[in-house]
Image (cartoon, rainbow, N blue to C red):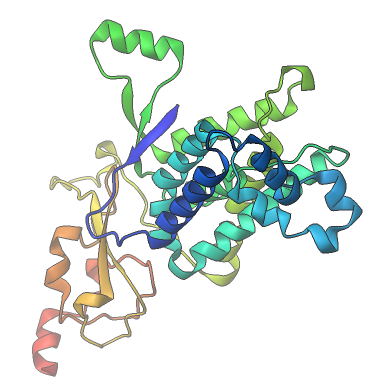
Length: 321
């Protein structure tokens, strides 16, 4: 399953960090991977790639290779695959994490490198590629945006055959959790497979980066209250008894802290579109403008959804004006 794109809400800001990372790695590859640059690539890879045996012999002086190795790629196919994953999943995660996105990405690269160095401790082969850091992005995405729609090219033979027989496109829209967990299971299977059956891919970095991304967001949410969970998703069959109105598939959430009894401003809120339905008490995205000037019974924190029951009565608004 190869991800090709992501269905996102229209108000998502431009992913400057993701774009900068992609452009930087593309520029490095254009310099090192061009025709006639084979010796230069080997030299740079040997110096700045992650060589486990050398790293454990002198971690104090070679620790920068945990980061620099994530900026190098063996060839343009290697680069293109990694950049596709980063573009599809990095944009949404950057929107969710904001200021924490770049430090999180760097920490994922370091952790993935350590995982690789641990499992290849005696190896003299340099490890390179951004896939470990991107695996961390996938782990965090699984928690923060599990139900986002991902357009994916199905590479399973039976899936391609079925699509051809039905005259359909082999590109399916699937929930992000389906695509990510499918990918992760394959990485674990490859990691535990006998060495004779493995490719040159660094599956240890993939698994290590993913587990770091997943665990770090879990800890940030559970211990520090950062990036709280979204409303419970509800299928059509889960509508409350007697509730016949169509349930929205979007909702309004706080972009920053909105204090109690302070009129809501346009910059205080944003709307999020999700696949599936959300809690009927949540204010749907298309009603977001109606919240401007309204007051809340209790403060809403960043990323918390705004429910109709959170709003002060309209007559109270008039009496305070």
